Image 1: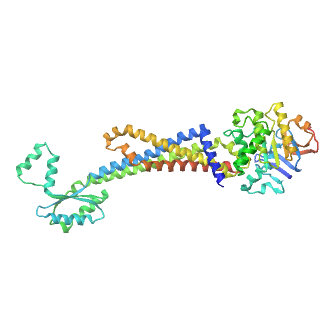
Image 2: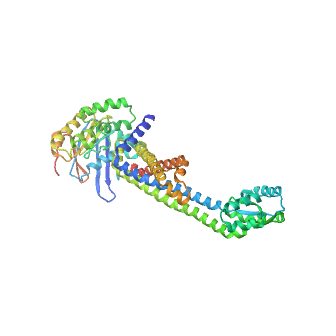
Length: 301
Length: 227
């Protein structure tokens, strides 16, 4: 048994290293396929980054009357945090609100001058609430608008921004859906291309398979080396793909970062092992599966 | 040893390759199957290897009905038969040594036995200095000798040669036939399909003559007679 496994592995390696034309063709196609698949992984990462950035800019703010103490605001905050929909609730004191306002409009005297004219801090203490899902802002705003907080809350800014939040929600789910659909379609095309290339490689070996059958080789002794060759093509293509991706990430990182804020190279390094696993699984899986399916017809007696 | 019983083979396009063919081959015989191209010689040999199924009748090898074997048992049957083809059917990605060794590898023999036997058989067929050459680096005669070495290596009970000299010049043809005779003298049954009149007449062995799929003559020391 062990001797047969050893011979199948050796024979697979010989096919991979000696049959250069078919191995080369399969390697090129498999590398392109894996490049497409890992680019889709990159696209998913990029779209998630952009969607999170869009969603991060959205919140609901509840402004508290001057008469409400900090303890009471913290009480409201802890009630909010107990809600499943709430991801975080940041407390901004009146002083902090003023500091941020001044920082934001530094150098714009026409905006800051009225503040000095008033002579006191006109800003409210408030809670900036972020939801887990943009669709949940509605429920959070309704919770804050309830009877329990009517005497403490001066205003909630959600109702002014509701259309913007809804539109953002539509855009982000559109991006996610679009990326998913494109990924699915391209993945199917990639799998079909890889499968057909391996099938052609095995078609070229049909005479060899016939000879092996005629000299009394068992189906596994014939099939095995082709599966090993498929696995080696997949594994080699995985490493080539990662090399290309890292090279492209390294040289293309700067322009993309200045355009979108997304650091491709850092993303690739951060997800290196996930990508390696994805490529190896897709490459070896496709190589072995395609070879197994394609060789079946030539093994029929 | 080998028995064809009322074998008829009709292909799906209705062409009749064999019609009601019956004969026996005994252990140690040298049998030539002659006939024009298309007479049914190759089909006759393919039936023995279970490459084709008969439309009627049966083929027995050592009392086993070849076509009733399960697909998983066919490799075992084929390991008892050494095949030599007109177009050599060598594995182009393997060297002469590896082509011959392959048969022993599929049988699960150990490396030491393989190394010893392959070297010996390649010496018998006169290819000891071509061991590491690939088929594309060999002449037609050398390729056929590799094919014979491969057919011999596992000491099969029978060697079936289908037009083994069809692509060879007279000198290589003579060498190959000499080899087959030597193998037969060592006790292996040989079935040789050919349309080379000169070879058959020189052999003076048993001759089966096929005409349009019918076995028209079976002579102990036959001649190639054009029908």
